[in-house]
Structure formats: C-alpha cells, structure tokens
Length: 389
Image: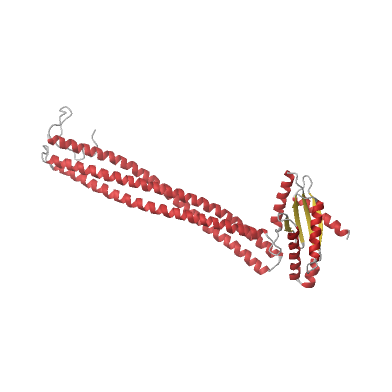
C-alpha cells in the first residue's frame, strides 16, 4: 500500500510496473521501489511523530496547570504572611499603648493566637505547594524526554526523506513517458520536508532544554517552600507560647490554662489517678496597689507565681485566672499532699520582701466533674476558709 508521499506527484514511481507484471528486474525499477520504501518509512515516522507531539502537548497542559496552581499558592502565601504580620503588629501596638494592663495583655494574646493559626495554616499550605512543585518538576522532566525522543524521530524521518529524494533522483536518469519533471518535483518536496523535520527537531531540543531548566527552578522553589514552612512552624510555636503565657507572671493565661485543665480532667477520668484543683487568692493586692502603686502590686504577683513554680512539680498546671487569682491543677496526688505543698508556698511567701500571703481553696476530682465544676468547688472552699479566718 502506498503512503501519501509515494504518490504526491501524481506519477507512478520511476520504472514501476503493474501488479500483473510483478517484475522489478532493471536498475530503473529498483530505484523506483527504493523511493517507495523510503517514502513509506517516512510516512510511518510521521505517524509516530504525531503521537509524540500529542504526548508533549498533554505534558505542556499538565505543566501549565501546575504553574497556575503554584502561582495561586504563592499569592495566598503572600496574603497570609501579610495578615500574620498585621496581627503581630496589632499585638505589639496594643501592648505598647496599654502598658502592663491585663486588658491590653489579653488583647495581645488574641492577636497572637490569630497569628499562630495563620502561620500554622500557612506552613501546611507551603508543604502542599512544595509537593505540587516536585510533581510539576517531574512532569517537565518527562516532557523534556518526550521532546528529545520526538527530535530523534524527526531527524530519522528527515534522513528517510533524503533517501527517498535520492531514489527519485536516480530514477530521473531513465524517466517515464511523462518526462522527468514529476520526479524532480517529488525529490524537491522530500528535501523540503526533510529540512522542515530537522528544524522542528532543533526546536524540540531547545524546548526540552528549557523544560529541564524550569524543572530545576521548580525543585529550587520547592526547597524554598519547605524552608519557609519550617520557619512558619517555628514562628507559630513562638506565637502560641506568647499567646498562652501571661506576660507578667510567666504562667498560663486563663484561656490556655482552662483547655489544659480540661485535658487533665479527661485524663484523670480515664484512669485511676486522682486530680486536685486549687483556687488561690493573693491577699491584700488591692491595698498594695493603692498604697504602693501598681508596680509594687506586679512584684507581689510575680513573687506568688515564682513561689508556686518553686514548690509545685514542673508538670503541675499553674494559670492566672484573674487579676489577683491563680488556679493550679495537680494530677496523681491526694488533697492532703496538696495541702502540704501549699503550706510550703505560704512559708516561702512569708520570707520574701513583700511578706505576701495567699488564701487557698481545694477541690478533689469526682465522677462526672468538669473543669468548671472543680474550679467552682475550689473557689467555694476558699471562701469558706476566709469566712473562718
């Protein structure tokens, strides 16, 4: 069967005979059949080249989609970075204006919690983007390989076309009845298409080199994304610690402390370990503030927090519950053991320069108790102690 190249000139191959004759004995016939065979091979390679072109086009579309996804992710990352920075600035501004007031510290905590959330989301988003860039880089590397393969196929096709043209030229020495012009046109057409194949092969190789360069860039961007994700996680941990820690006393803020207390309650309900919660009131804080100023009151609160840390275990929860109130949670200990520890706290406070004192209420965990139930009972116990002097 003849290809499109075989008969593009509208003539029989030079020296060809009909199927009924079935003979190719002369040199003239041999040249014609060589031309036909070279044209057929070139046509087959054209078909393979078209399939390779489709593979490359599909790869280009996949890479383009990956580029758009990465671009969108970069824009989102930039927006989130700006939002987190704005939250940091708002927290700093509020604390600078409000000074040491509890309200300003609480507002700063809210802003830092939001910044923590943004940076946590940002870290996860950047990791997803990094994975996407790695996949896109692999896609580009595959497209580059396909382009190189297409270039090789086009060069081979060009060689077959040149061979076909040479065979047509050989037939011109014994032209058919119609004269040599059709053979000349066929040979020129093959050479023209061979030159086009080689030009397209050179273009394929250039584009393959570009694909490999872009794949290298995407892998570099992926490494950068992972570095930024690690930075976001580290900054989020700093923000979280700042948002959960009372700036003055360096103990847990109320919101973070309540969440931790509920986890302690849930853990104690699941096992045999006990849990004791204490409600602590700093005696005379208002009098100190009114008489000696708020800096003296702050020093008193710091002394109480330091004494609590010094006498309790490192894993016991200490949180600032209000202006002059603290709540502590001590797992795996009975109430008598807790009372002895707080006797040590009171003894330590009695020796400090402020000669501070505290009043403490105790509550031991019961079945079905929540964190709020324990605090409520400990507060009631404190009031009972105070009522009895």
